[in-house]
Image (cartoon, rainbow, N blue to C red; front, side, top):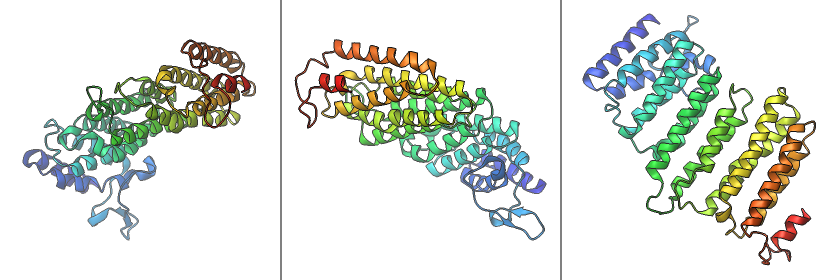
Length: 354
């Protein structure tokens, strides 16, 4: 283990002097196997027994212990980033370092986890040196989720979610259509991937601070950028993120071990639904399928109202619904005599019946 530590440290220093980043990244790729037991599902090569009770990585390189790997990871990441990220010339090199930093951040060693988190943040800020952010997001986002799920304190969790929010903001600036142009299909797919990622963290009961991803989700959904985002995209956001989130929060309520926290999250979920729906109401009203979104929202509010043993929701949901009805009424949504969908009823009659 000591020999491996020295070899890898030397490789990092030679990288800094001679620019052999890719060679060092290949060596780094062998380290995560040394702390998969502590980190869980960490991307990394398999290791085989060396016949003496020890473990070796690929190519005969002894695997470091979690603590040693984390300490070395902190040192190597600092060296590799010392040049301002200019050495991260290729997408593969950059992603290799991101995988390593994410694995180090999931280490059981506190110092290593902190260093890995800092390295991951620096790498994300230097992504432009390797490739456009939207090209790497499908591979980057699961690693950021891994990083967030490995957090052991609320403060660490807030920083991890903050990093994800920063990546989302940079993605929006990089790929969203400007000058009133609609965003590309690629941006839409990436944006929905981000929303679903935040939702998955909101529903992770092991997370020390579930408020952080819920707040990040709310900011993402309420953001007006880009300004010409089509109503169909917002409809997808409700169908793929907001509605499933509320459905799962309601399901978790039945078996909640911390009723107070779950009830508070449910209340914030209802607030998210109301704010997002009203914020994008003018665009959503132009959709032929608007009545389906509206009826699904009403259905969820009814279910939350009937949540067993929740006085907080019993008081908050009727007020939320009242506010939504008032705003929709003021917008003229219930004045149209047009039939909704294939039914002979108007939106006001469908709402009254529901």
